[in-house]
Length: 320
Image (cartoon, rainbow, N blue to C red):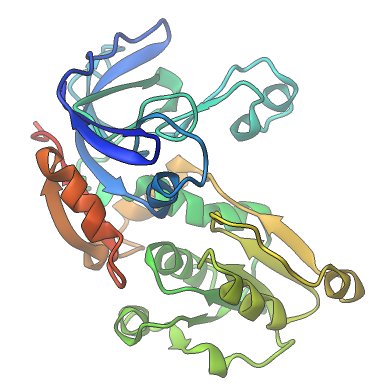
């Protein structure tokens, strides 16, 4: 099968990768659509030592698996877990000590004609959800994870730092809570997308220090962290949604003095994500800026790395 292969920080479009054979408990999925994520770009830059097929955002069709899923469109949770370690037993499977992670840790990913995932990871796509839109299920779920970790009410002042793909989805999902929400970024056009949805936006100079209850850092760079940190009142909460390719330095003493709660946040609830997507409570269509066929995946990566680009999709096969 054709697949986009990463090795030694180099991408190669291969045609000699065997179609995977699903082990017991897993399904064979023909990939229809896949999205290029910032994590994929960071893996290419060496964020984590990975060799194999990249990609973790996808919609596919089950070709081998339980009868109720065969020939159905599905999305899939990216962590394949053991179910037996201390984290799995205590209800934290995304931190499984023995997990593989689709396109990230010891498991080939979505930039290929086929993939395998545990059957329990798969979720059917509602009929009313277009395939392109369903491709955003994983990042929408990741955005929703914030609300699993922190109780947010209409009385809370919340700041999102970053106007990229992740920041856009985090802002839209947080807006559903009715909180007093502001988003800051560097790109007027991207901020205008959110402003059109009724969300307050601006640049970093609009942030008044020590006035927000919660800030969410979605840039993955030290400048974004600094803005998110200075925005917080004492006993505020800072959520980190981005992975950092390099090391981050900060004033730890100020976190202690102000009693700041620092929370890392990544994978989130797929059922809730599919629910709000199917109810059109988030708008993802405007985020799609480019589409490429798998044969042109390297060009797609080049495009995805250009400044200002939002989502680039790979069209891998027909969705029927």
